[in-house]
Image (tube, rainbow, N blue to C red; front, side):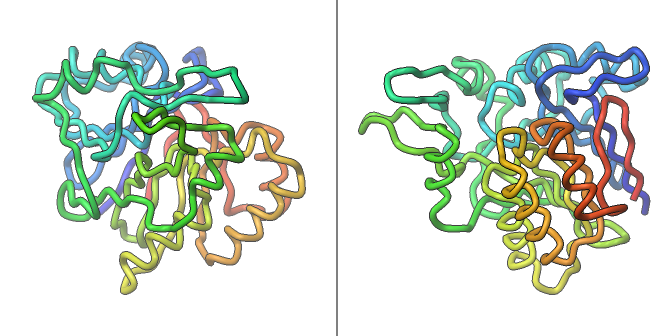
Length: 272
C-alpha cells in the first residue's frame, strides 16, 4: 500500500506556488485524505488549487499544535470542506504566547475557533486512532516545560504565566510498508523525544522516518549537530524537514546525516 505525502504550505516556494511561514501537509493513505495543519493564512487553499487538490475531498484534518502558523487556515478549511472532523489535542486553548520579561505576543490559534466550530472539532486525549494504521500520539516525555522556558514560549492561565510544556502538540503516525512514519510539524518537544515516544508506544513496530519541522532556525551550530547525533542514534532511516528548520540548519543536518535527510518545499512529494 503506497502512502503519498504532499507539502501544501512551507516556507520555501517552488514552481510559482507561494510559500509562507507555516506548514500544511496532505497525507493520502488507504484511500483517505488527511490534512495536517492549514498554515498561517488561507494560502493553503490557493496552493491546493494549483496542486490539483480538492479541499472538499479531504476526509480528516488534524492540528499538530496550537500555534497560529499551523492553525490560522483552519477556519477557512472548515468553511470550504463540509465533512472532515478536525482532531485537536484536548488541552488546546487560545493561550499560547511568546513572552520575554514584559513583552508578549500572542502566537496561538484563532481566538474564537474552538467555540465557533465546536461541532467540527474533536478534542482528543491519549493515544488516539483516527482510522486503521493512523494515530495521533501526544508527548509522554516529562519536563518539556524546560524547553518552553528556553524558547520563551508560555501559556496564559488563570494561575498566571506558565512555561509551555507542549501538551497541545501531537504526532500524526502512519503505519506504512517501510515502518512507522511520524509527522510532527515543529517538533517542539524534541526530535529524539518524539521518535522515542513513538517507539515506546509501538514497541513491536519499526520507526522508519520523521517528517516535519525541527525548530532549529534559532539554534547554534553545536546544538544542531547534537540534534543530528540524537536522530542518528534513534536508528531511523528517513528525515524530511522544512518550515522552522530553515536552510542553515538543514545544511548542517545534511552534513551530519547525509542522504537520509531531505528538504521540504511547496509541492514536494514523498511516496512511501
